[in-house]
Amino acid sequence: MQTDATFEIVLSDITMTVTSHFVASDEVFRIEFSDGRPPLVVHEALGGNRPFWTSLPQGRQKEAEFFGARIAEKLKNK
Image (tube, rainbow, N blue to C red):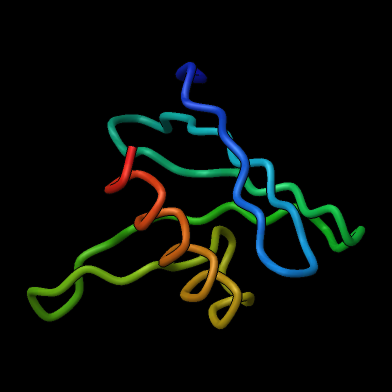
């Protein structure tokens, strides 16, 4: 199920198109990149009583943390 939360985030050299989706009761974000890299799906999870961003499937953790923080900023400032 997709919500109507679709937005773009523009960094200095890349544009990301972000869409929000629900899997079971968890919200995940699919990121499409203007530079041609494969899309990335990220989810904000809790670990040790603090939230962190992770990729689904695992393996792109550094990207998930960086781009997840940009998503969180965008949603907070909406």
